[in-house]
Length: 293
Image (cartoon, rainbow, N blue to C red):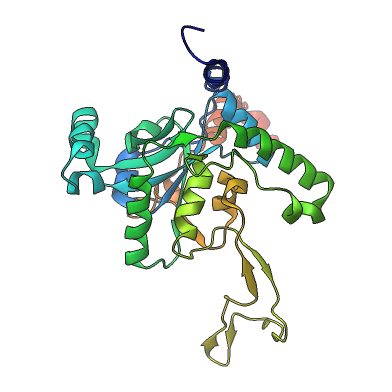
């Protein structure tokens, strides 16, 4: 074990197994990193379809394409004199102005946005969150750097999702997940905690408040926009959040950064492969045959 404790040795072996890349990864689209840099904002959540064994586990458990989530903090480290700023410049160079905070198997770290240029990603933006709250979320994310990853949460989450599929009504009765340590997180539990700290919902449970009138059929009633913050909101345990929840959340917008701001997009100029293939595969008909048809 090389001087390690049995627990540390086991954790190392599990981490090595979970982070081993899968043999095949299917790109559904090309990620334009330059356009992503131009459109992403601080406080945005980047969802990633990973290529490791742990990615496959999370996608299978959540029935989703997304296995990982990271929070964009941009150039925040460059604005803060100290060792983190120096390390960011040393490791990332020009990319130090476009950084993510994420919880990986090795712990909570800072990564370059360009790291995910070869993966399928989705950009989610908290809708109408106040600038002061974005700054608070970013500040707390930076303070979380160095926290360890909650390996136990993966196994507990699998148990929870399995029980929830068998007993849907028991979701809220399942015990708290994970190691119960305030210094251990998963990617989504970290981000969930950050947004909950400013009262911003991810995917809460909402039940009608006593005496609330039924919601209007239209979002617009007598010229006024109907309120959508109705009912009683209950915070979900951050350790139960998954990347899919940010994708499904009505409080996070999906930003189509590939075409947003692109004035040159014209669907009528797309060259579809099947049209080209069909033209190449269709033999020319003799003139006499064509005339007689």
